[in-house]
Image 1 (cartoon, rainbow over the protein chains, first blue to last red):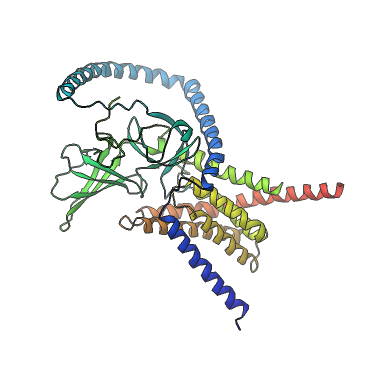
Image 2: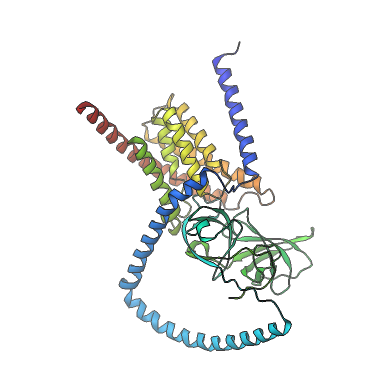
Length: 277
Length: 170
């Protein structure tokens, strides 16, 4: 009735359709906390850690022993900078003490991130279209899905998958990422989303707010994931179209994700409050 | 022995792509190094041997990538199927053909991944630098992919020879 060729074409079309349907269904819950994928991470990540540590060790040897000439110059420069930093530190200490006193007066509850966890980046996403990294802390260390991840420079991302000893972090530059944030100066709120080319888009910011380049963007604490007041980045560009209720704001992340080596995993907190160490 | 070799190659390619390549400016947007391997399996090995391997490698990549589970499994499956079909009509040993096959496979992967990115975030669309990254990846793949395939083929031939020698001794 049907030729072999027709049957093959029909079979192929059914297979393509089944593939697309399966991907659409799976895509609705992209990061399951179970499945064979976790085994793959458990197998590959130790090797990634070994390579990262070996290359880092080799870099350290190079920088510490072969660049001593430049280190001497750098040392002089750093001494000068240290003097300035000491002065600044004293000023900061005064401000911190004043801040502390005021907080005590206002009876603000202290929410210290005591159980934060330091982790090392052991691998990066194999695809340039997705922005995730693997870190060497997992379920055994108390890491759970949804924990916020930061670095001394600012917000890094959120834990999306956890295995025994490793976790996958979705960076704020990933298109699927969303962080509730606000502009520090104007208090204009919006959602930080990954925008490609290492930049973020600050979406749903009303046109009425006067946002300018260089202004600092921090977490609002309203998403229930990131504590309030963490540095996200600075405004890179603002476009106000003649029509529409929102403006287009591009934000440059504070963290250099190309050079990200260590991160801090914060405990999940549904409470709002400033981050203090 | 052959499967151990395949798994070692897979692991090496994944490790290079996720640990060594990201730090290098020149190779920042390097292509998926498993593609030449999948193309090799599709062109030179039987389907019943190649397809399970392609699906396994896809699973590994899916678990390490930020995309939806099944993306890389689907991509590798269709690449190996297409290459298996092509090998019946074209001479797999030709350098130009190999280069074009790898370039096409990388282009196919980029199209599928970008389609997923755009579908998952309709308001964001395709990244503005997508065409630039795609061009660099395809160019790298066409230049270096055949070399990788040649290396894999050479080791494979050596393993096959060793297996034959062992069989003769026994």
